[in-house]
Image 1 (cartoon, rainbow, N blue to C red):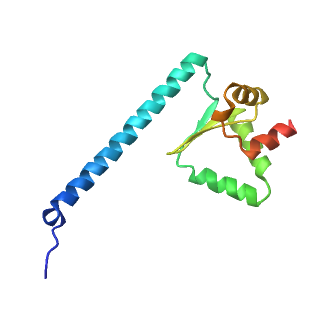
Image 2 (cartoon, rainbow, N blue to C red; image 1 turned 135 degrees about the horizontal axis):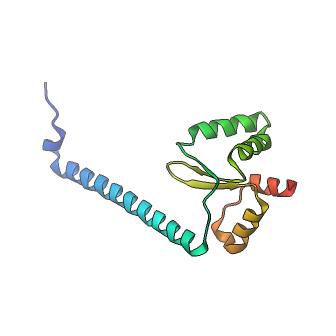
Image 3 (cartoon, helix red, strand yellow; image 1 turned 90 degrees about the vertical axis):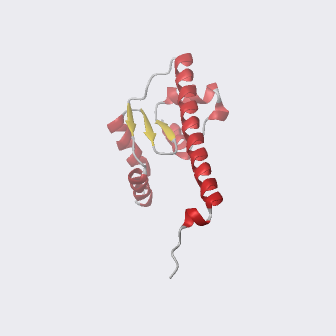
Amino acid sequence: MALFNWPAQHPTTAGLIFVTLISLLSYYAYSQYHLNHTRRAFKLRHGCQPATSTLTGFGIVSLYKIIKAKNGKQFLEFFHRRHAELGTTYVSESLTRTLVITNDPENIKTALSTRFEDWYVSSVVRVRSVLI
């Protein structure tokens, strides 16, 4: 019966894995710091106001509710109820991204007239703006 002692048998591999993990964690921490610093500077420079409310979490529950509403042909009603609860503009945060969701025509006009290429416009916004 042989015992497997991985770090002692492969010290360079273990060292490379350790250095790689530390490098990736450091890069992620720096990129988050830089992103937050850039957003804070942008908000100060342009006088941005915070959203009325924020949804936080992993987004799995929200994704499930959205898919359920879409499959039940209640998609627009779902977002209409959500806007009634949270306000015209709210932020949805997950681990990997932050979404600004709005049904306020003035916010949509302002966002698209400033730097159009920075914004991803989903079909919900297009449908909602047509209905208004």
